Amino acid sequence: PGFTVEVLPELDSTNSELMRRARAGRTEPVLLVAEHQTAGRGRLGRSWESAAGDSLTFSLGLPLAPPDWSGLSLAVGVAVAEALHADIRLKWPNDLWVDDRKLTGILIETAAPVDGGASRYTIVGIGINVAPRAAPAIGLRELQPDATAPGTLLAVAEPVVRTLQAFEQFGFSPFQARFERRDALADRAVRLSDGMAGTAHGVDERGALLVHTAAGMRAVTSAEVSVRPA
Ligand code: BTN
Image 1: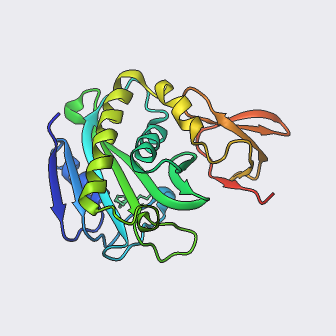
Image 2: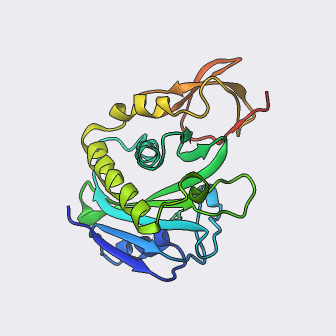
């Protein structure tokens, strides 16, 4: 589909703006870029803080009707990681890490079904650190000193759109091996937010994280996972 590209100097959040538009019936494909966000949002109610120039913040919005939504955020993470840099690893479900430091966060939200049909307006929000101030983060400037904002946006947006189209047709399974090639948690000791500890062993064909625990193998779909110090 044809995408409109819109760059605005300031917004509360590109995800919030596309959600407002979707609720008002505007569900056309768009790439919305904010040069500065005043209330950027992260997963699990967290915020995405950045001053102007600190990070690239944008959202893709389009109607999507996959038969199964599971694994979408992982597939998008794969697309962004592959588009940016060879040494990026994926921290399940969809953070991008370099040396265990966060480069990119992804927040996917869906609005109510479009025209009462099968498709939902899907908002894929991506924040890429460029020159972060917070300590455990890493920025693109350190990895690719010559990268420009428009160049990076184009390099990322196009593969993400193609990924969304492929996901709509084939679901997560074509992305499983590509995820595992970059799995930051593979064979590492992890702790789940419910207190359970174990060793991570990749993902299944729906994108659930496989964790070997004292109680056996668990397929984790919605917990927070942290790496345990060795
Ligand atoms: C996370 O790390 O928890 C996800 C962060 C996602 C941040 C991006 S910035 C562009 C888009 N608009 C938002 O408000 N959030 C996402």
